[in-house]
Image (cartoon, rainbow over all chains, first blue to last red; front, side):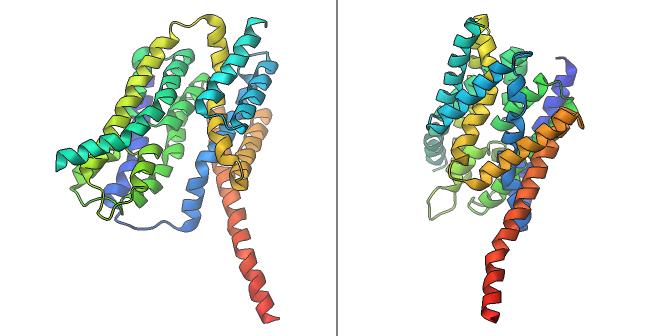
Length: 102
Length: 242
């Protein structure tokens, strides 16, 4: 990917490190307003929703069925209490069988 | 004293190291299928060290999102650590800024939860934090490298099937938190709906669409919940007036 990748990596490293470092070194027990901390704690769940849809449907170009089967399988395994690894491996397994006969 | 604190930190952190094994391995594999070289993939784990952001970056690279937007997205996703380290600061032993700045690099969701839930009368020592952080970090970097190496030797039909892995992982992260938690369901659903709307109308490029959907959903849902929280109190006040 060339030098752009390394600049991007440098930027990512910086913006990841700063929120970890600033409060520990400079902020001595000052609290954030509740609405701000509420919004901040919402972000991980919201970002997952935005990342999954609609991109998951178009994982294999021109084959939306691939995405749909994957979505249903992953949700099913996760809902039945499978951990992270069973969800990922199970979905890959189902789609591997599907793509063998595709 | 210092050494024994460090060692017990390593012990406490070994659970994280085991937990990182499949996630880092999968990251290495996925980085391979995304087209990153061995060095590029491993370097991301070495320098960035943020699971969710790294996975997100892979999907953004796949979608040809520009690097600046990827960096901004990384910031938005990782800003939650600001909250965590702010609360963790209360529990930590006083130490020179340089020492705290050094172990701050090792604060992730997982190391935070191990440190923050520790029941001790005395404050957590820096040495303990270094122990927890170093074994977790070592596991993350090593298994990223191994995952990429393994991914290079897989048959094609498996590599095709693996293109779903990233999203399956997102679902695997989301569903357990969403079970029995309406707010989480609403957050994810609203973000998905906003993203779909932007996607199908072509209003914004992908990276920005994800950013707008994430922030929009987080803010809207928070406002709704803040209002709901006030309602019962308002109701009670009215009743008392009656």
